[in-house]
Amino acid sequence: MYDIKQAQEIVNKALIAANVSKEPAGLYEPIAYALSVGGKRLRPALTIMGCNLFTDSVEGAIDAAIGIEVFHNFTLLHDDIMDNADIRRGNPTVHKKWDENTAILSGDAMMIKASQFVTRTHESYLKSVLKTFNKAAIQVCEGQQYDMNFENQSFVAEENYIEMIRLKTAVLLAASLKIGAIIGGASSEDAQHLYNFGENLGLAFQLQDDLLDTYGDSKIFGKNIGGDIVSNKKTFLLIKALSTAKGDGLTELKDYIKREEFDRDHKIDTFKRIYDSVNIKEATEERIKYYFNLANEELDKIGVKEEKKTLLKEFCESLMVRTK
Image (cartoon, rainbow, N blue to C red; front, side, top):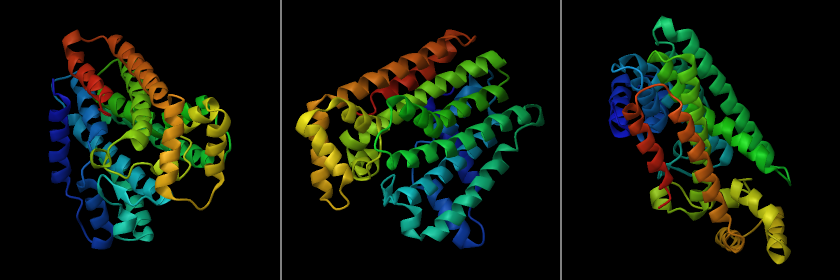
């Protein structure tokens, strides 16, 4: 069985071999840049591991894995435009390094490239793989729309937020694993359990990102801390605080959310102080543990030898300490 680092290495070598640098340079250089500035390659690595859970040969899953990675980076490229983000993985975002029009067009080309890679899957698995990929792709867009909608809503229910991050983040992790399982010859039941594992893992992963955006180290996290607070993103932390804080703390939160002009650092410090006063960090950590536990329960249901699941369990546990 390949561990996560070995799976990531397979993906990195395949990305280099794919060589997306072509003419016109104005279209393809931003794509090569977006794919070269780091990234954990978690989703394609999980495709490799999902396949390896059911077969020793993972060659048939590599093209689909690359397609998933290209698609994921396409979503990040367009997300950065919508969020007006300056930094991604410690480097300037594509629309800042070039311009918005370039980023939009290169992103469009990445979506097409992603589909091209996925459709290289062997025909015996192609229909199921495409169905899984396309469903996840449209759900990611749905999740992004909900995320944007929430920015203009004064109230977002906790369950609506969880559904949004399920769509925007969790389903692609889940689909990555399921696609690997399909190509590896898994039964439909095992492929679904692996999907459920990935979905719960994705929920925990996104909640960790929420936490890191407020309590992380920008050098480790790879982007500026506090961006969610500055943009009034309805993260789990803010939603929980709005339903938990009382008195002056709640008044301060609501006041800052309405302001169009403010000192960035002061707003971040104010939110963190209020979050600390009502134990938002601890509440978020508890919810993260809840989804990690659900993920492991789904992994336990998969009908392969226990030792084959060990590396996925170890990877799952490693994500638990991402904030430490």
